[in-house]
Amino acid sequence: MKTSKLAWTRRQFVSTVGSAATAAFVADAKAFSAVPKAKENTGKRRIALIATEARKYSHAQHFIDRVLEGYGWQGRHHRPQLELAGLYMDQFNENDLSRERASRHRVKIYPTVEEALTLGRSKLAVDGVLIIAEHGSYPRNERGQTRYPRHEFFQRTAKVFEESGRAVPVFNDKHLSTDWEECVEMVQTAKRLGFPFMAGSSLPVTWRIPSIDMPLGTPLEESVCVCYGTIDSYDIHGLETAQCMSERRAGGESGVKSVQAIRGKAVWQMLEERKNTQKLFFAALSRSFTCRGRYSTALPDLEWLKDNHEHPVAYFLEHFDGFRTSVFLLTGLVSDFTYAGLKRGNGEIVSCQMYLPMPPALSTVADFFNPLVNHIERMILNHVVPYPVERTLLTSGMVISAIESLYRGHALVETPHLKVAYKALDQSSFWRA
Image 1: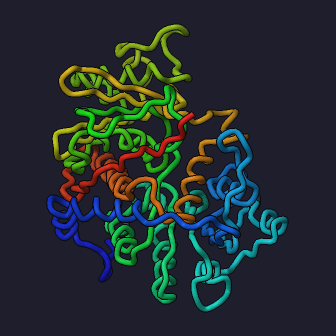
Image 2 (image 1 turned 90 degrees about the vertical axis):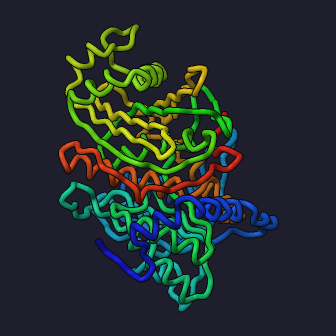
Image 3 (image 1 turned 180 degrees about the vertical axis):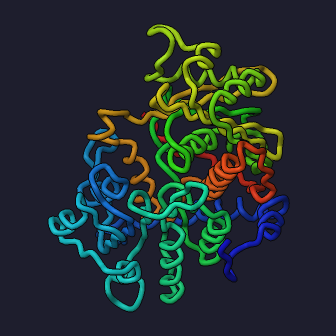
């Protein structure tokens, strides 16, 4: 693995993030939230957007268009108080849209990350940075993970901050890296330099159907997400769906002790053995708008699934406090993201759908990017993070460990390095409607 003087070793990370250090991490999150709000702006804040590629329906296109042209928010068209001042594109494919957007909106595309942040000068010249390293042609490692340059873009950004003697808020799209030490290094660097750092995807901030919150301090004992998609891509969405609810349990998040990932019919065998997980699985499935079951009017049962859905993927996670998380990737059975959580003691199940308008609406609207961009805008304007970055650090580690489990032939992977303990903020950040 790559190391540097900034990277934490596994032992250092466990000792720093675990036990006594939990209070420090929570204090950092609260400190960011406690920064006084900026005064009313008379002008826009300048941002740099660092991306891998911008083609139709790519993540970069969704972010670029919302910053440049606005988006629907709270019943009106909202134009963010952000100016896209510097743009860096790592790749230009035959369907590139960045040059057309840059020409039409008079935005300069710079040849390097550094020049996009300094606007071609010697020092940092923007008020915020967006790193959108998703999509594009990049190598895969032996475990099948795409090595998007998220960590590289982040470290180059941090170097500009250090050389300029000034740091500004940063947003990183989706998980932090495919390498655990790089993930830790990114969070450590943000804390060392003292800038608000937000990361992750749209799932924790989109609509919920029904529009429910998990009250802070709820005595939960298990969470399940049922979703679709591929590993090292959509799995982070499923894990974030579960984690944004689970982290609000009594005692807060304690970190993940072990991860096991399973493919194929063995998933159904595992589910049959775990009765509470099975209850939550069907409760989550009942929130789906797209489930393709045995009949048009009924959910599939376990026996039908055994015979008719042969290619599931599931992640089973044990937390340090005994809590359980399970994520089921059921491509072909569902096309949405649903959640169910079990309360300790009374057996009550809390469930909802994290609503993402699915195809064909997805290809034309993708409104679930709106609350994410709105949170980014407010972070840059006010230096307020909507949720602790430790959530994305932990879910990034969950993905890495689950892929390691698959690589080892479904082995149970012990994860003492994932003792990432933190507490959720009082206010949830999902889009209430």
